[in-house]
Image 1: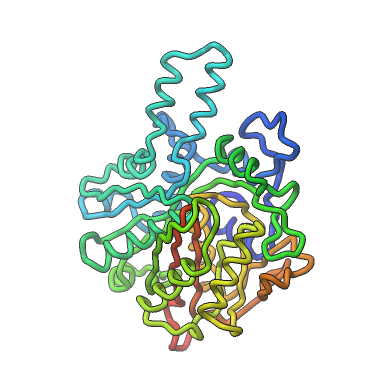
Image 2: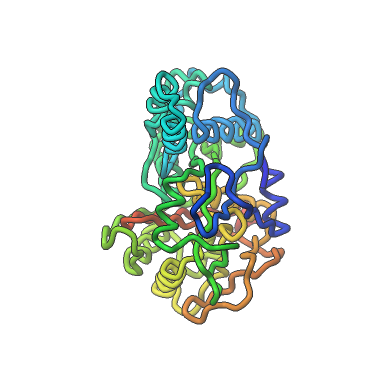
Length: 388
């Protein structure tokens, strides 16, 4: 969709489909290879840093977030700051390049440098190093496709406990051959587009990107004249470990209930669910089944931005969080695009194909991962309960 808040907001409102042929690696031998790559030129990699693509996403998203929040990096250098970045693959994209160097017979110092960059901690460390932070708590969370929400939960706790004044939280991942091939061999890569909750859905489209949110107390935001997008009410985490890849209804439902309990909310308080919504047969039925366990027949509208952005792995729920905050700020529901016929086995109002204005007070954002790593974060309109 591009770079920055305005590009994301415009894309969500118009229901932009970001699917295109994969160019990140040689797709020879795959029957189909559609994905959702960040366009050429959209990622701004700081010069001379030697960052891998995933770390560059984390750094660039952080710089955009600080700019949007009206914060100068220099003002953060001597204050306690948490930096939490979620990821699935870290710099696994570099492994593709190492293999390419070996095939070309050009191994040596180049492959050694790439190998050193693969360590996932480099994603959050790159942010702290680029901002020259002196009192940073630095953490990279590797809870796969739930990792962005995990990072937001970590930042929330760090703020609430008073350990830090600012938390920079989100997720970053770069499209890589390893993950594409893994999902392809599982038979879960869609041949053309992603159709969550649709009777004809055929799977995910792998994507990439980065999203970072600035968290601080409301008092801090007001003192410096900032206007928050949303309030983080609470979150829930669970790891049911029921199966290596198959999702579990009870585990997802438990995560939702935990988030609601910690936020002090009832199910009826939730206006919109930003679902994990991968478009696979198993995920969509399981996720809606878990929602029914909690909400009964009174399901909130349930949408999937992966229909537009693809599945950005560790960045997915961070992008979902940013989208949830934008939906609250601008009072609209993003669409689930490519929709034709709702599958009765996962029947939800998925706001098919076009966005719509809506009165939203609370949005529930899902991140579900292999191994039963589940995460749910609840966001609210800052002025809910008062005149807007």
